Length: 252
Image (tube, rainbow, N blue to C red):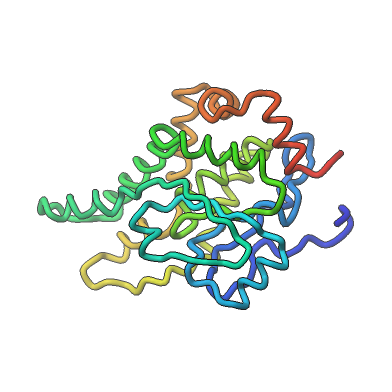
């Protein structure tokens, strides 16, 4: 498509996934937009229908990178014709911490869960960084369109998307806008629970600026900013950065 063509829909209207969307069109390095229909982010793909499978096939999506943990993958497996699956497992921690708090007799509140979520995000860019380094290695070798996802497509996937966009020169404010888009499109399949306060569920299943900011602030504080973090922790040196740009940014 040319710069004068109308952009395609960012959010794909799939029956089995509400948070399947394209990272194309965001302005990156030198104002060059990301290529459309190359990088997709999503929630888990276990509920996709046969019609959804046809949509992915028409898009040429050939690989899925799954950040879900072992039990999550077992609970919601999927098989999409023509889609190769790669596990980059990052085990979930927030639910276990919530259970431990409840077992100790403490009350689960919105602020308590928000604190757990911010700790999660700090851990994602710290202890879990090797998984994102693996992901970038795959990005550099991918010839066909791909999708990356976790369970809800908001936390592990949200951090992965933020790192990709930052690596391609997308401004932080745009990175945050993409991150927060989950709140507009994602429809959790879980019904409200009488034993959990609505504010707790909102803190758990939504995204908040403070969550991603916790990760970015840690990157700034511990590594001197995204540039150094991407180079020293993710392994994106100058040559690999240029390869990433050539692959996913539209040419000048």
